[in-house]
Figure 1 (tube, rainbow, N blue to C red):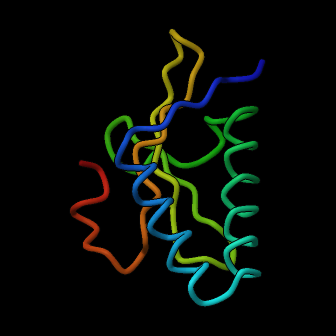
Figure 2: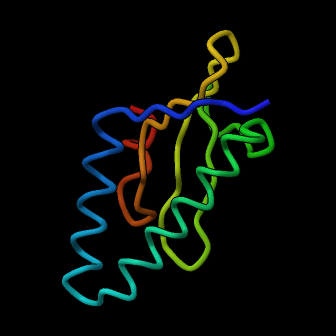
Length: 98
């Protein structure tokens, strides 16, 4: 069963900021970052419960080769995954689940 994926505004802003940062340095790095995020989101669509629960209802999965985690909530009733953050590992971890 495939889940739908929704994004909170915060996650969209964080993703766009990261893409812009990578794009300014290298188009290849930006493209690879985009692919890395898409691959993890595709996994979340199919098996969101596979990744660890980090805090209360929040789950988290790290990207390979990029210092980011995708923070999300599983809404079983609506059969959807809500991505709340594309969180950079160097940021204050206390902000991750807000």
